[in-house]
Image (cartoon, rainbow, N blue to C red; front, side, top):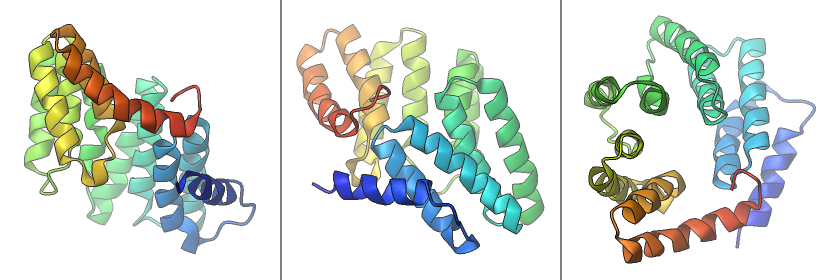
Length: 208
């Protein structure tokens, strides 16, 4: 019911000609709206403008998070070398300012590393992250689906869905549907596909 209002708010900030330092936190939240609406073009624009604004005003406390957001967008676009460079810059600034944020690169590791290395990297970062975010199980599901270990992928994707705050679990549902179909679990796949279709229909974009 709130999709239209969310989209209007996102577009208003995305296209604003006069952004100020006080808008930085709003920009970060607005990037989340763009991804929830499966609006890749808006996500990329917002992520890029957030980094530009943080640099312009010298907001070093915000810049690592902004760079990581842009890097995640670049991962989704499939440009892994560019994403790695953005993450590296975020790490340097984060280390210098005492705010490391390594968990953001987990999906890049899942998509770009070999099986054993990817899992080892995911495990290493998870041990240092006290938040217990769903991202790690989602990343493991990606890795297991990629090598054909579908039963493990299905259970990991299910756990990622269960752990995600507010039930916002679109990407994990994608991995669950694929794994369930490969395992012959058609009913479980259908039950996961229904909420996935509901979520993607809201966006109406090519990415969705």
